[in-house]
Length: 463
Ligand code: LLP
Image 1 (tube, rainbow, N blue to C red):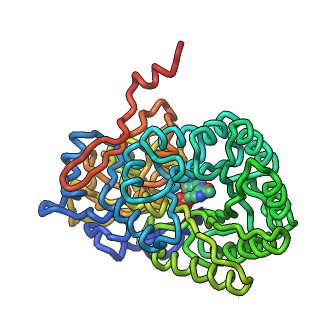
Image 2 (image 1 turned 90 degrees about the vertical axis):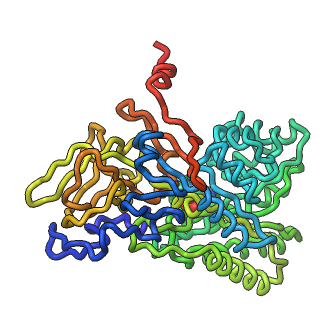
Image 3 (image 1 turned 120 degrees about the vertical axis):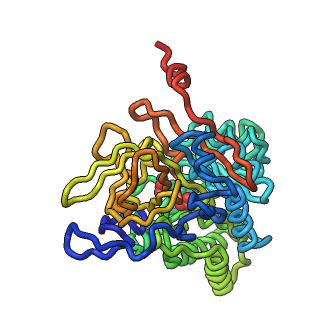
């Protein structure tokens, strides 16, 4: 899943012999700007501040665990993506990474489009006033009710994911008297991991329609034959947390090949291609993400080159970054509870959250960094595993890291780069209350998603 998918011990430490780690090279008090959001720094007393506000105040006002989202960083990343791609391309923020009404408003203000993949995300987007024509609707199994809602709202595009869906959307559009703009999602035979990709003839997964065996060309044939569909282009999303551009280049090349085949067979030049999301971010100091300019240049160069050689007009490009926009903008703040040193192994540091607010470590073996943020410390580094309070030994937040040996219950620690797929995948396991998301900007903090309460839990449980 991530570059750090394979457990190899602390990434910022040298492995001496199996099970023993050297002290980290970096000073634990120094916050690596690669993994922290842009306004994060330490104040004169050594406490972390974000947007000019110290963590002690944030913890007191909003409690822990909580996600703190650096709004100016979020907006800056939106701008960086849209400036990098320029006026001839569209940037769709992938709402599955994290979506709320405040986020939808920021996206609008920063000129982005939005990719939604469920009725719930669509409702959030529309409720916050995102113009429907700026919305792309995704999903491998959209329900009839969801499609009807999307068509009625007038979404800018529905991304078709199967032969059945081509007919289903065409039928619903016709019955609403609408010519629905659609793209066809294809699987290009590139299985992207982190810094490797494996080209396969057939993709053994649930998304999209395969290019390899002519299925995608057949899907285009069918979509072009249906009056209630306006086929505007081809979509490809190759995976997530990818650092290497090679997979995107292969994907772009194969999509352009399909455009050329469509032109040859139907005399139609489809005007758009969407190359999906999936760009990696830094979770630890060892990760080296690409900048939006570099990504934009690589993608537009390859599309332009391939189109020139196929004699095609260059289509409008769109991309769908989720993690790369919101991931680095937030950290999770926890209070340290029980500390359990295991002689000869490591010290288990329990926090007041866990797999209910960050399932990624348990699910993908994802790696994270962690820092003591309520103060600095000159104590020796100790090897720790940060764990949650759930009834499960796999309830791990940070598998291997170093924290100062004088860590004590009541200290605040923070895990950076939790803006993507943490709150959006949070659960109520053990009847945990999902933490709030607090937006911080220019000395002001405001809740954009409130903390769940026990009343919320009881309200769902109708007895
Ligand atoms: N477009 C499509 C069609 C997608 O399926 C996805 C992600 C994206 C865009 C955005 O990808 P991003 O830029 O955020 O990587 N829960 C996993 C990630 C699942 C991604 C699913 N699709 C995780 O926590 O890593």
